[in-house]
Image 1 (tube, rainbow, N blue to C red):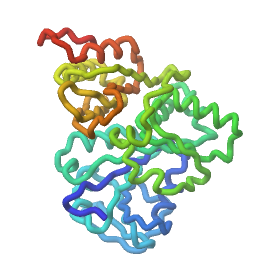
Image 2 (spheres, rainbow, N blue to C red):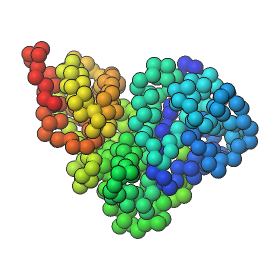
Image 3 (tube, rainbow, N blue to C red):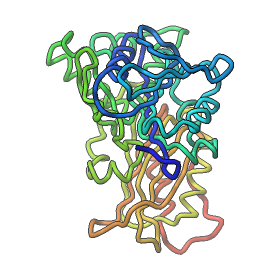
Image 4 (cartoon, rainbow, N blue to C red):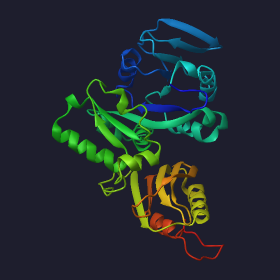
Amino acid sequence: MSTHDEKTPVTVLTGFLGSGKTTLVNHILTADHGHRIAVIENEFGEIPIDNALVLGGEEKIVEMSNGCCLCCTARTDLIEILQSLSERREKFDRILIETSGLADPNPVAQTFFVDDEVAKHFTLDAIVTLIDAKHIGAHLDEKGDDGVSAQAFDQIAFADRIVINKVDLVTDGELAALRDRVRGINATAEMITSTYADIDVSQILGIGAFDLTRTMADQPNWLEDTDHQHDPALMSVGVEMAGDVDQDALQAWLSSFVAQHGDDLYRLKGMVAVSGDDLRHVVQGIHRMFDVRASTPWGLEPRTSKMVFIGRDLERETLTAGLRSCVAVERDPACQLQT
């Protein structure tokens, strides 16, 4: 259970309309899984509520019937909700945020980058995206001004873990083709399958998927096999370089790159070897915000820098040249960085 000296892990659950998010949330709120979970919802839907505790205004937190969950309506700013929950942290040890079917997960994820008080008490554990195996292909193919295709792409691109739901409605061949298409949009997220969103909650909660330190430990080859047939609207570009980087040069290059290309850069993640440091450094970014911080020791494996960029109109040559420009060698302080 979480204490006031520990950060509470937060899972962001997203997925297009009809993907099965409500079914999954109902399962979490009523199943006897032993976890104490606070669920932040945009809408309650058909969720059984035993007892309501009004916090003030339109904000409401309710105790669920299984005795191990809380649920609250997200009618005000997410930061305010998290601050309210931080005062009740003895009642739960995880938080699940369900976004609406048409929501962009980006603003929710950014909350954990930009607000110091939120960062003090909570940590982003994973962005989990549910997709409807039967209908997601049609959503991705849609044309027009309603943004349906872009929203479906965004939700897949931002994911740290992808749940392909309703696999009972497609053939094995259709599922294999869908996996390949999804992998073309997001090269690094682990994919799992389900029917009626019936999954073990340990597959999506407390997985540390947003933490690349844990990703590297569980999946040491996470960057490999990234050259799939990409959908033209979105792509994943993986870049790998042996040897160390100069941290100041890396910070400068990334700052310049995201300033110019942030609108088209959905996710940035990587693990780099910093010159003069025995620790791996994790890189995480969303649009124009990024963070580079020390992680775990390298050990005996080669010191290799790996980064993945997910977005639109990305050029592999530019990204490769940019990372290579940060190699730790004697350089002019006014190094011309490629952007």
